[in-house]
Image (tube, rainbow, N blue to C red):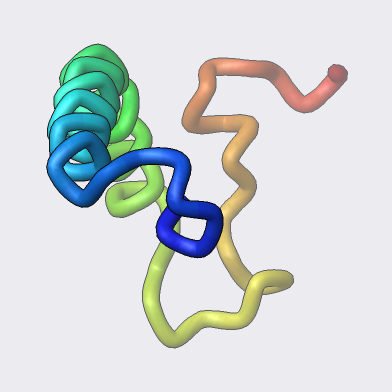
Length: 67
């Protein structure tokens, strides 16, 4: 926006504040999903272990081996 002089610096500041407040709402909405995904993978995967040696995730989801 600064290159084209469409908005003044004051208007750009107001736009920036409103934009950040809008993204804050989305972050609060998706926060439980992010935390549960973090907890799931933190408990399922092990650090320092190759991907092929990681335990199968399917058994943690309660799925049987026939699927």
